[in-house]
Structure formats: C-alpha cells, structure tokens
Length: 115
Length: 114
Image 1 (cartoon, rainbow over the protein chains, first blue to last red):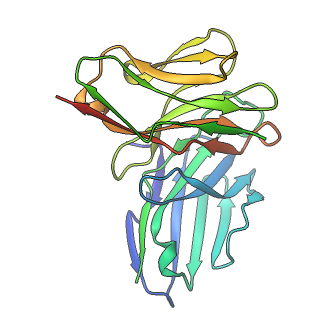
Image 2: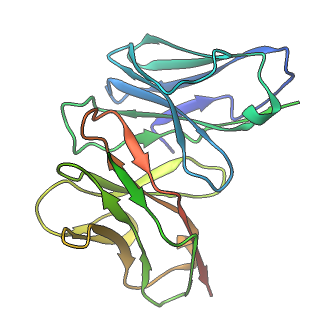
C-alpha cells in the first residue's frame, strides 16, 4: 500500500466534461506534486505546491487547474481536455526543500482517458 | 543545468545473474541522486539515494548503487536478479536551484527471464 492515495483510479471523460482528481497524504509532507506520465516514458512535472502555495507551474495549459486546500490534500481540476491529455496522472509528496535527502513518495495514479 | 541519462532502453538478464542498470548525471553542484522502480499500473517506488558519504549505497529489495564522481555515474546493481525485479527503472536528480524539482531519466525496462 502506498502512503499517497489517489482517487479515482480510472477516469473516462468527454472533451466537454469537468472532473477532478484527488490526492491525499498524511506523512506531514509540505511539498506536493502533479505529474503526467505517458506509457513507458518518465513522469513529466506539471505543478509543485510548497506549503500550500503554488511554486512551480511547468507551462501547463489552463484546462488543468491545481488546488491545494490544505497541507494533506491536492486536487487537479480538469475541463475541456483533449485526447492527447489521456495519460497516467501521478501525485507525489516530499518533505520540503529543507531536507535534500528526502525522496518523493508517489501514489499509484489516476488513469485518465479522454473520449 | 541538471540532467540524468539512461543509455539503455531495455536490459535483459537471466534469473540468478547479476544485473546493472546504467545512469549518468550532469549537475552544476553537489549531486542528489535517486533510483525509483515502477511496476505496471503502479506509481514510482523509491529504491535508494545518494546524497553524500559512501560511494556504495544500499537500498530496498537487495538493490545497491555505485556513485562514481569521476565518471559522473550512478549505476543500479543487484547481485542476483529475480523474475519479480522485471519493471521500469528511473534514475532521478534533484535540482540545485529548487530542491522541490526532480529531473528523471528516460527509464530502463528490465526483463529478468527464468
């Protein structure tokens, strides 16, 4: 079992739908991440939150909207997605930048399919 | 700039034989290096890290990695491969200017045959 929980595990949506991905961790980590991963490729960083503030946005299209309601929760709101957005979306967390030795902990992801 | 390279898309090894998955890095300061493994339909799992100290780092599931500063390498090794080690392996380096950012290698698919 992973310590980072993502829901739902699978999501199929049309291009006009609005949906949200959720991520939760209870390890006291203060940095949380969203990654997009295509099959057999490395994760691509999308967003980083540090102490509930957005610290990195890797030029992600506005149809993806992150939200960090508190230190344990991270959401990714989806609207008007394109077929090329179909991928595995991974959430991760880590202790914040004060400790360079700490790795990221990943959830098992949400498999997103856009029809 | 920081980056890591994994020169092999795939590594094939027989069960019981030693395995090596290669990683080279490029950093402008101290390297903070990590190895992760990903099984099908799962997230990435942390295996081991090099921050400072001994060049031979031991990690989970019998894996170890050798840090070589002169060759800028951080190869993952295991003395005796198991079929269950078959998975996708990623090397990663932590960014120097923003410790919340990690750069991943392209990944290496390890196939262990019985």
